Length: 52
Figure 1 (tube, rainbow, N blue to C red):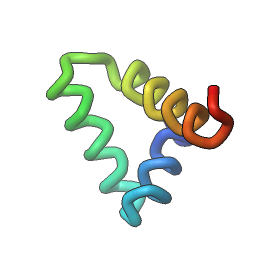
Figure 2: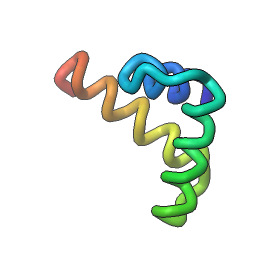
Figure 3: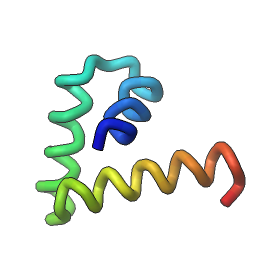
Figure 4: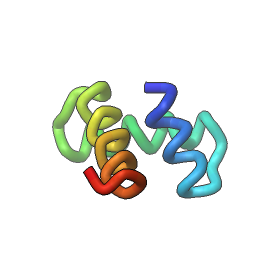
């Protein structure tokens, strides 16, 4: 969760509290658990950086 928040903070120039709210919004909008959203963000970030 912390890593996903960090990614959102870096990419969007937002504070930690805003990153958490964004994670929660995505979770609600997509009807996914928060941890699943965090995992997707981390995996997408890895794919961008490492071509995975």
